[in-house]
Each structure stands twice: as C-alpha cells, then as structure tokens.
Length: 112
Length: 113
Image (tube, rainbow over all chains, first blue to last red; front, top):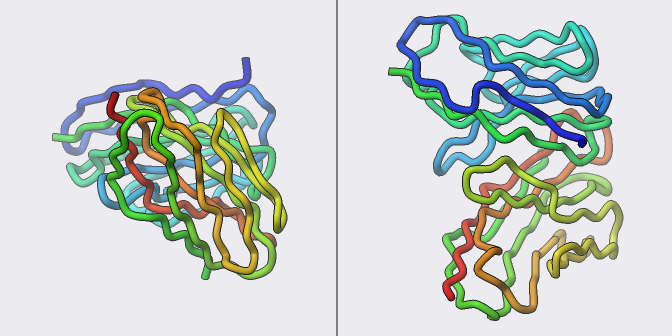
C-alpha cells in the first residue's frame, strides 16, 4: 500500500529536549516536505527536499532542521524545542514539486 | 505572488443539502488546482484535481471546474452526507518553478443529520 508514515503520532516533551519526528514514504517520490498546522493559520511549510541531499527552507524554518540522506526518509529535528512549536505536523511527498502531494497521518507535538 | 483564498467557515448544512465552497486563486500562467480533505484526526487526502482550464475534477460526488476567466475552482456536491464533515483545503501548484503547493486557509464543514 502506497503511504507516508510518521512517528510518533503523539509526543509531549519539555522545553529544550531534542527530538526527532520520522517520516518515510514507499512511493519512490523525489519531493518531500514538512508542514505545521495551527488554528487560524492553515498549513505552513517548514522545509522541503527536491531530492536526496537537496533541502531548502520553507515559510517557517526557524527552530527546525531536516536531512535527506535516503530517498524514502525525511526526518524533522527540533534541537531545542520551545512551547511555540506546539503544533500538528505533517509530512508529505510527491513525484515532483508541482504534483499532488500525499500526506502522512500527522504528529501532534506538545512542548511544555 | 501565488495565493489561494477560500470562503471562510465554518459551514454547517443539513444532510442532503447542496454544498458550494468557494475558492479563488492568484497565479501567473496555468497552475494546477487541487482540493484536499482532512477528516478528523487524519492527514490531508487528495479529493480531486484539475490541471488545465475548463477541466472538471470529480470524486466521491464532489466536483470542481477550473475557471481561468474567473480564477476560480469552487467545490460542489449535490447532496451532502454526515460523513462529508471535514476540513476542505483548496491548493494550487504554480505552473513554473513550483517548489511547493500553495494552500488556502481551509473550510470546516459540518453536516447535521
């Protein structure tokens, strides 16, 4: 089954404790992206990757890091989380940047 | 720049009512247009798409027509069901140099039995 998986689905953590949210797709897609969804602000792109070892900032990259060492994986790293990073996070992938994207189920992060 | 404007929600309808969710866009050239749906507790799913002017996308009883002259891509359904309750997002992919999809703010739809 074609899918995008994210782990964990739910995470509660404390300020400053480094965390990683994993994202994996099994569709051999070149393009992958991370979004955060906040009430009243819609979906905002954090980082994206056009291919292996090619990543770039989206609209709200501050406080986040990503890497793309393999085509299927695109982890999101919060090195020192803060309460304003409490949000619902989605990973997405697509064949190419301008094509329809497939979304993961989401990770609800709470930083206290 | 590129942008998408959706009708503000929330929208509440009775079962079997007719649904329209308006979406207009600003973009140069001929972007591709999409409607995504997000059911409670889930990620976004592609509902339908259109890639050129006058194309009609359809799926699950929903339809939307790409109108270049009015820069619109309104979502319609003739008879909604309770199971259609969700958040709906209109989005576009720019025709050149696309690096991301541009999403509207989303419209929350609630259908009452």
